Amino acid sequence: MDDVEAVLSGPRGRRFCAEVACANHDGLRRLYHEAAWFPSDEARRRLVDAVADTAVTDLDEHTLLTCLADAVAHARYWQPPDEADVLLADPVVVAALRPVAQAVVESPTWRWWASPLAENAQAHVQWTGQYATNPPRITGAAEGLREWRRETMEAERRAQEWPADPAASASGPWWSTPAEGRVVATSRALPDLGATQLMLVEDEMGWSQALVRPLRPVRTPRVYEVSGPQAWVDLVNRYPLEVSRSRRHDWWHTTGRAVRWFVPDWQAVAADHDAVHLSVAAYLVTPGRALEVEGGATVVAGWDPDATFWLTDLLAPAGEPVAWEAHDEGGRWRWRPRA
Image (cartoon, rainbow, N blue to C red; front, side, top):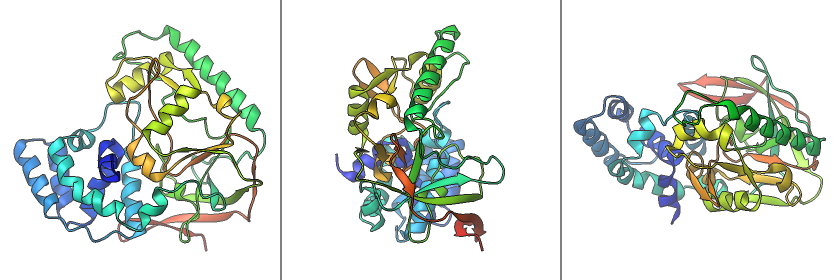
């Protein structure tokens, strides 16, 4: 599968391409919303015709990141896909988006989106203001992963009392990451953006202020690269941890599948790898899908694009924290260092 087909195979990739198309065509967003929330054959036809007439020329990095941020913001792994994601899975709409995806993968930005971890350009985002988060915990990863595993198994035990019907009204942990706060999560620093996670964060809380701390590994890390669905499947198959009871209801709503569910046993992964990185390109393809593994399936959920989770105590400060703020600039949110 080439990059274009891969992007269009995932719900987040299709949503991203739709946002890129809307950014390049005045009036397309109205047709997009109409076809999603008031579906009809005629509405879909008008949308497909408009997408086909779209010349994708606005592909600067900030535009692409803004479009990706919109796709990330609509990720939800605890309920069914929304109307727009349903529309964008229609093969006719997917075919119309193919030239958009082609333009994206040919853009200069795609090169770093598909690249492995940038070891010397990592930063941690600590949200400030309302719903503030804690500074990074750069020591105690082993203890944090023990806590994560204990809490995961406790969630499984509690979920024994939930209804067996996956369609029943029940919800629990829906993510497949080691909980941030137990270990450190970083993302890439760019020349005009302190960390990509400032813009690219799932299940965000409306944050507009943050402290960004540059961090750097003290030695060359052993990095597991999640470069796409197969890499995630291989990771789960090598380090499986069953979480069927606690994920049964949420992931059934997300994928429509009633199977045994697995995530990586992050405590076991840490014996062989210092960090696990999900590239932006892999994010467009991998999350929100039921991926077949030995004995059942798995879902990548709650993992931001280009985020890296550090499973061992390998990071050290690489500079002073910098305060960043988001500003509305002509309808586009842009993060800037606080004056």
